[in-house]
Image 1 (tube, rainbow, N blue to C red):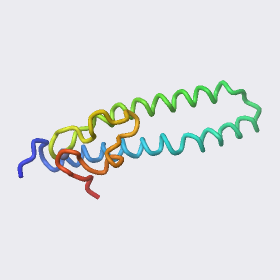
Image 2: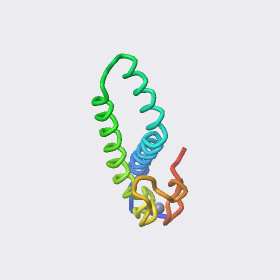
Image 3: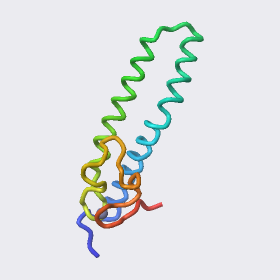
Image 4: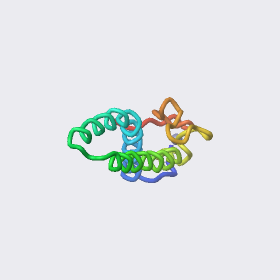
Length: 110
Ligand SMILES: [Zn+2]
């Protein structure tokens, strides 16, 4: 089967971007609350105000939005079509959390 996405080297680079985006999505969602709680406690301990915390929360959420928007438009390295279903939740790709391509079923190589 020939691939429209190019050589294995090119496809491997795309899979690497896929893993980065998936990792950032998980980290961004599941570490948000623990990190915020920890920072709140730490900032209170050293007597800093909530302003810095608001900035950190804002930057964090913006990063999640940017990553989420980019990641849901990720194209399959094997078939070149969209990896995730259309209409998916924009911040968390809903295709079983994106373990395989909806078009060709390709999975990220180990
Ligand atoms: Zn595919």
